[in-house]
Amino acid sequence: MAPKLHLIRHAQGYHNLDPSCWNLIDPLLTEEGKKQCSELSHNFPTKATVDLIVASPMRRALYTGLEAFGSILENNPASDIIALPILQEVSDLPCDTGSELQDLQIEVEQKNLPVDLRFVEENWSHKSGKYEPTSEKIQERAREARCWLKERPEKEIVVISHGGFLHFLTDDWEDGNKFEGTGWANTELRTYEFVTQEDDLGNDDDDASIQETAESRQLRDYEMGESEAIDTLL
Image (cartoon, rainbow, N blue to C red; front, side):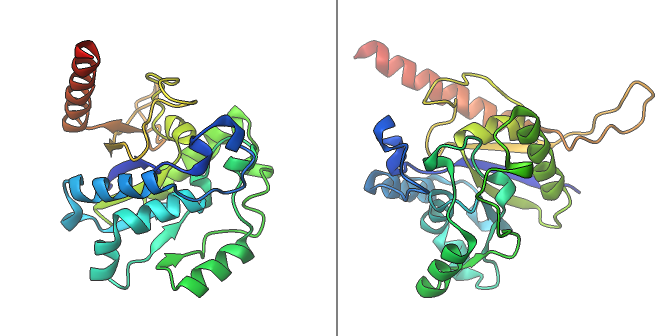
């Protein structure tokens, strides 16, 4: 049975503060971002049933996983965060460009971080080949990511990625510019399940499509309604 996916946009990074910070390469989390991780950890509904945490190798995504799900990693030392480069952000701006693999390896080793870098290639941050910032290439790696996740043996997987890429991963573009280039807030959580589709001949047309669960959608609608009500009062 295909796993359930808990998709999360990373916490606030320094590049989120102002467009003038977009020239920062692979920025870290701000203090506000760390607070968001603490809130995510406190509010996450099913930590006890999470089998795996997967994240973009970009530092803001990795550290969101480390900050928010540290208790899972401590309770299960064999379950490191898997860094998956196909989850990286879509543009070739400096802030959306990851660190070189060697630098990540040194950081993980020196800080003794529970991060598995085995899937990270030498050129993962070069924005070339399958990582080109074109719609066609981004769609291809979004499908590759879904297929990779679908084949995992775990039942519940946390996936930490980026505001732009999450639209491609889910094929959901609702409120795509609600925030800077995305409809996802920092540390926003949405839960998805895989769905089976068929082509015109009735054969499985397995694009590894996913659909947001009814419970996740209802919770989002409720939270959006609460936010709009507060805005009206203000």
